[in-house]
Image 1: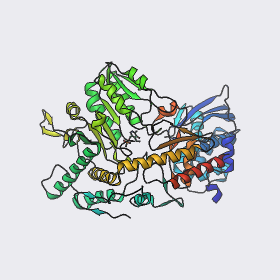
Image 2 (image 1 turned 180 degrees about the horizontal axis):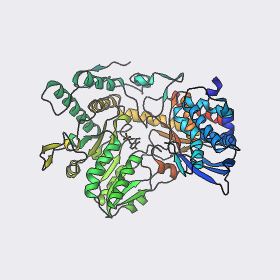
Image 3 (image 1 turned 120 degrees about the horizontal axis):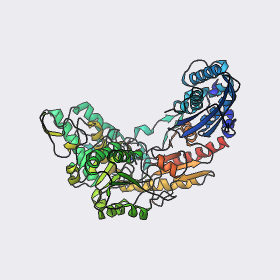
Image 4 (image 1 turned 135 degrees about the vertical axis):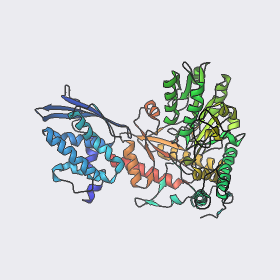
Length: 146
Length: 424
Ligand SMILES: Cc1ncc(COP(=O)(O)O)c(C=O)c1O
């Protein structure tokens, strides 16, 4: 597990450089803006939720490598999932970066962010996209992680 | 470790340094510097946020706690007298440090923020009204923006802002254009914490005085790095924080000209600031007590006095010259790295090197530097309008003190190169 505790791994650097689903959805069913005043990270999540299933999801904004990679990988992880599955992933992800316990397999390649727990000041960077997605699903329009 | 002697009543610091700046000897005075972070020697380059505390200052605080701990101005007993003597002795040192006319012009506060709020409440709320104008600059710390905004909102006054150029220099012509008969106060920083710019405050103060306008100088970043003479500057208020000048947190000073402080309302009400209290009416104590309600951070303020002794002993002029050389060297090294852009390139600068790297967020820079034991600040430096002006979300900032070395700057430059490599 030791390499997982490294923060800036190739996968993260790659998603930072070439973020996936980095675009706007023209008429999303849900959208929310996230802001981390500490770093100046700022992003918008666009979501197309049809029959409680994520048909499409994307994001735009600017931020540090951790928040950008986290947003990018999040969009990949939640596409096609049900609302309930997304909420479960959100809980699992949050627990993984804030808690020392064993990380559940279900998080799949999101487990790459496990190392963030070693960097308390960066936890908010990793969770900002998830909080924002959560807010979008629950129709809150603005979140802030300070 | 250099020789030091501590007595209960005063601080005796190491004998003056002779010859060229002996940074190893200076470093020996600062215990915190001699540790490893993430397995690497600590390279402390966040002095603009808080600087480190020399052993003599730590010792002086300990002497108070171990031998003198008691309240001031309140006891006829021995310990209280000793504590009062030490506390008032620190005020004397501050007076000499900034060359105030009288020690009662030096009010102890928790730091620059509290000092500015004291002036906002005591002076601003009493003398500034609807339609009046307050001038600040585009490079202020939030501490010198938000209190004035709050006052403007409360009173219906107007906040006006001196703009700056792309180097981070204030546009003095524009400033002169902003001054008018509605101006009631000018608040400007001596040295910008985000850019390092040294502002031409003496000239700016003289301009304001032509309109009879008092000027508050935010000295949080100047007091630690250059000799300051409030009489020569002719500023009306000057504020600084002890924790940025080698003293503990919780110490700081607002200097004000006596006639202004006398006309002001008290900031907080409570013990020590009164002459008489009945349920019908309270009369206030004389300066400085009128503006120092409640029990202050006695150990910290005594520590500030000891830090001033320390600064005098090493030579303020010499320390400033050495820091200027560090800044010159760091600017040369860091700006030579491809992809790095320095934010704040004023002609006159002190101690601060703010930079950004193409496509790498400052927080990522800060985290990687920290992995190598290097402490810098990454963020907006409590100066969001400065970030907006330069169109960056944040910067990484290395800020220097006289105990930093060129070798540390080499480590910084090498690690910045490594950051770029990781992200390439
Ligand atoms: C220029 C300037 N003004 C004001 C402050 C506020 O100082 P403090 O937080 O000690 O009150 C700072 C500290 O960051 C500063 O750099």
